[in-house]
Length: 481
Ligand code: SF4
Image (cartoon, rainbow, N blue to C red; front, side, top):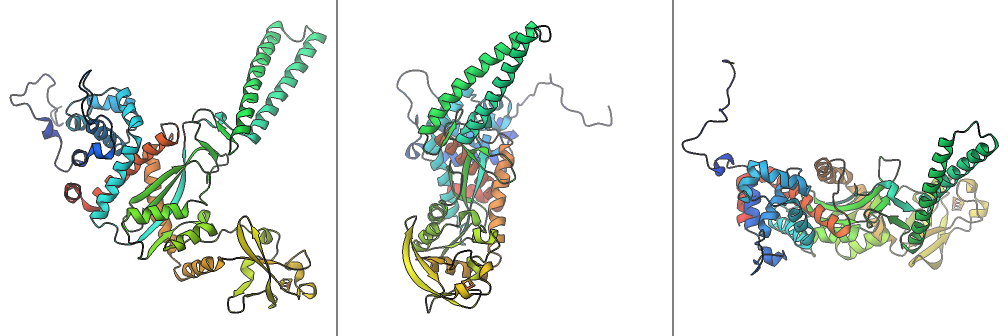
């Protein structure tokens, strides 16, 4: 053992015991957590229990529990039971909390009871970043990602899923009944134990069918045709790279393109991103402190392509850059699609693939939008009509605000690396957050609690990111400023 580094004897007494502070080096991130929470005005942010009760058992100050949570989310410790355990053995937490060890219920109740205040703390950190001039480029990328909820997919139902489940049970009943029939005809071939087992299974199936009937009633009353039993707010949603839908939430984030900080986020249970662009872009612009009169660009992927949202952005002075969705029924049928028809603004006509003029014919309203229809009189005699339409005339529809989409397409053509910037910007935070969260993702149930959980994740991500960008000392300075 002579050639190895030796540790101290466990029974060795120290003449001058080390202070807890000696274990925490100057650039330990736990010091940032401490200073950040100490600088907050917790009562103004809406935390409950900032003033001690006159009677009863003294409670923990909210700053103690907030420090614990921020530390936990920075170190992949999100569950209240794990946090309780860590307070008893983790030197950094002993230093941070002054050796206080709240039990897991107190820890969990704090997160449950202070949701809106915790969300404001997340916003407050973004404000500090803004004041530190970290958002000098007025560009944000908006993206959504699906996060798993605490809800097994077997306990989430749509009408189709319910029907499949009921058909499976009916098939099982038919199979068991046939087996019971056989047992009546040929009692020697099927044992009594097997008959007893089948009867027990039939009882279980009957109970299950009654439960499914109850779920059918709930489904009929559900506005979006979905019922989740464990977390009632979670929804089945398609997720890229998965064959089966995931039961979870759709988390929207807006990330600044310069430093990849999450400037705004929102947890939704809507399975698609089509209505999220304008609200997220406006939140991002506000969070980044950009002047509404100045230029601001929002980048998003095809999933956000929605004329109404892009128009709303344009009206709010936000330049949206969203590529067109690639779905086209005509293209799927092997016919020319709308891209093959060129709009000519001067004459308000379309030039078709056969170089004929499709002229404006009439206006109509479809799904609340004013649509103008165009077609050419040459269609019946057109030599390439079989590649264009199966009707007498090929009608081309144009939304009254289509020029907004045309302008956006022109901008996209002029900035070919816009989508590369978008990908580079938004993929970074999602990859980091998901790896921190592990396989289970959210630990809490229902939309408000999940939103609080996400705010803690975003806050932890932003703190870590700012520490990487500015270093410990400067981060400490912007917090104290
Ligand atoms: S069918 Fe009509 S719209 Fe289509 S290419 Fe021929 S003329 Fe043009």
